[in-house]
Image 1 (cartoon, rainbow, N blue to C red):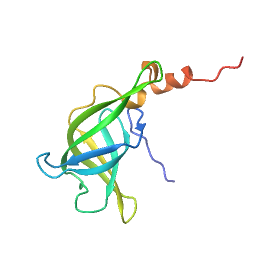
Image 2 (cartoon, rainbow, N blue to C red):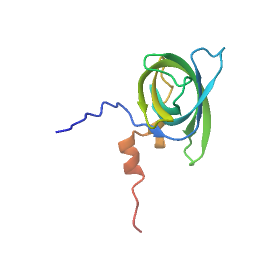
Image 3 (tube, rainbow, N blue to C red):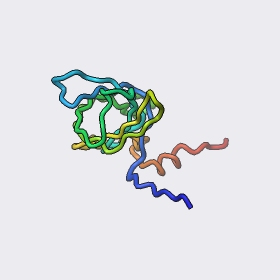
Image 4 (cartoon, rainbow, N blue to C red):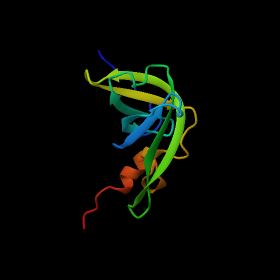
Length: 131
């Protein structure tokens, strides 16, 4: 039986926005595509070439995260975080999915922003109402 355990401690925010990364920000920056993010890490895709990070590598990344307001508005909050690569998956011969674990967490949980509630509470708040 193939059984997997979800060890995630918080919901992820899925969104597609550029992420810039390098081993050292004084060097050449490479661009990836954000896939999802939590307060402690992120997943992004990058070209399967020499600029793609490898397992265990330390990188610094610059990215933006949507911060949602009470009136359904949002702003993009900019962050720079260093961290280490904890996973690299080959999506295709041209693309890899990379997971970075941040050395310092974000000041909020991106996937749990709805009305300041946790994900389960947010679903209850957003249930449709019949009139």
